[in-house]
Figure 1 (cartoon, rainbow, N blue to C red):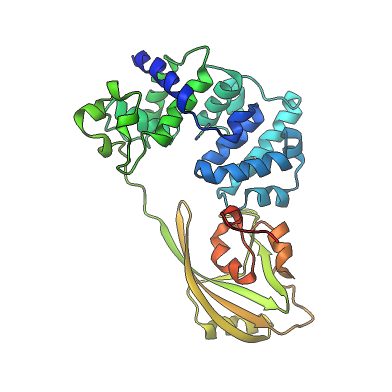
Figure 2: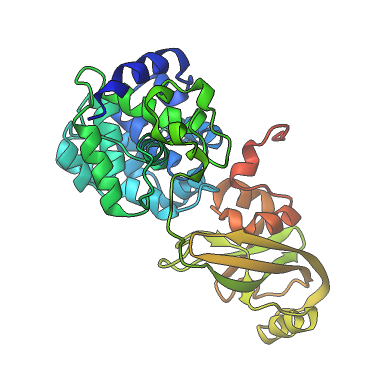
Length: 362
Ligand code: ADE
């Protein structure tokens, strides 16, 4: 029913597609890595992660064999760390079952760990030219507006309906470009938050939301459950030049990553000193640090922090804590961005901040 969007969409894409590293040299591996990263954060933020990741791990074999800490370090700051763990599981299946080559088959891709309809559609269409849709948040926004649909775009059935409609019109010779063009329109023209550039849109001629003046009302998303709030007290524990970190449990939030020691609740300096003494440490000085907040998908951490200097004792590494040189942490141990505000007091920089403009590695 929407065949009339195909030609104007592709002509527009030919003139407006952004130059992006994963579009320069296309392989199933590179498409896959970029698409998973793009599910986490903005295109601009993905670029340096992508370059670094494919340089360190240029193919599925390298990914399949990468030690976990190294892998998590490459992902540090992107969030949803299970995604990269699943990528490694998928890489191992591709090596074991498909001789290291991505199957050029939508259904087989869908069976791989961490690959859902969107990613399977993106890899099959962009890397293999298979006519399957790739419907992400961008595409849902564009289609809701084109059709002036008030349906809840978080509903699976709405997404499925859009997928079925697209499937009928994907052009055989340009499946990947078609999907990317829709994503691109959503990313740079049909943008959210009252900033849609309808004057530049090649699909304005058939956009029902534009016609009815309701572009900014769409798309509709049913309100999500509220996030749980957790208070935590984060400690920058120093002994000489060394600071304490520990590994998080293998299950649950931020599984298997490293963290600064932290305690449940908002504790006073007296309470922190007491807890440390109970564990056999000898604190010399304590300094309150600014509060910080980190938002995960289901939880929000409200953190308060203290920098504590400890006297050296024989048995420093206990309770799962170990003391290491701060530089070593920056290079080797993946620490989630939730701790970035406090990691700064160790003079280390984590995740996305590493790539911010003006930063110099010395
Ligand atoms: N967002 C999701 N997939 C993308 C792609 N292939 N190019 C640009 N932005 C994207």
